[in-house]
Image (cartoon, rainbow, N blue to C red; front, side, top):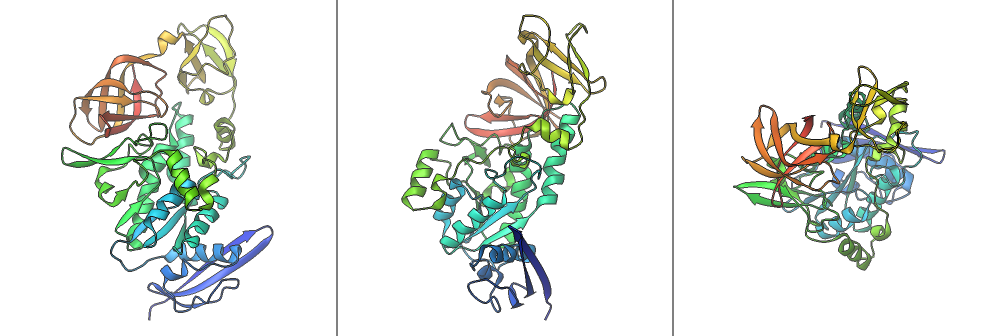
Length: 419
């Protein structure tokens, strides 16, 4: 018999507990935890993931299980991504009972002022586990704090250091998160992965593509625009055809505790803080520099080029009565270049990324909150170029250009150059 020892621990309010498991394949041989509702010896890892008890003991068990979790395949089994919020709770409700919940524990800045609303906080993980156990569904926590920091947080900091305006949520949702969740679904013997994203999957030209949700106010297709279409056959978005209000009503009708949980914050690793203060803590130093106009004349001072982004107006300490906007920043000289709004107009965009289907024309969405604009699309090595049919103001390198044909996302890439 080939066995492995797994140790998990948890601490809260000055208390600490540890769980030791001896595991053979997918079954627990021996275990020594206190505070659980039942003995773990002889249980499969899947069965153990549904065991409740004292919160600290259950958390320590979850930490141990996440390191080795696996289960034999079962027809119709669903892996459900659980955030602790109402969207994932309703998704779980629809998938139960043949489901297994999974929550990613991700890195957060410990110096941030607040973490309660983050989708990866310890409170959210606990809420996700409680939602699963209330329905008799196993729940697994994957501790990916270091992997997340390396894949998402470090590029965010490096992007601002380079003078870009990166979007960490597209990197997280479109790449990191789904890579981890789909790998887990395979280990869990699940046929599909369900998430609470507001998006849909449609077929176009024989290929599955992410598409806009029915609720335009909650549509998350932009955040998912970099998701590889090849995985969509295994992914489901059960909430894509309904509104957020309908989701909350469904949760309330079912008596789910998450029905009244507030929305999670964007860029969860900031832990409720302003990104500029976060960047300072990550090593981007304040340094006095010049604010110059397009002719090079000094019109003001600033204390760090990386604290400014294209299109920004507020926070500029400049002389003169007319409104001025950030046009670009210069890392080499620590300068911020400003000008009139007309100087922000962009007519051409280059991006590193992919066209999912061959297209010559698309609606281009250049920021999460911006309206799409018509554009001619020219494929290029490693990406594409967009010739915009109307000028767009405030386009920033580092953001994602998501391309739409009607409702479907037909390409996406990170903006590298604008003219």
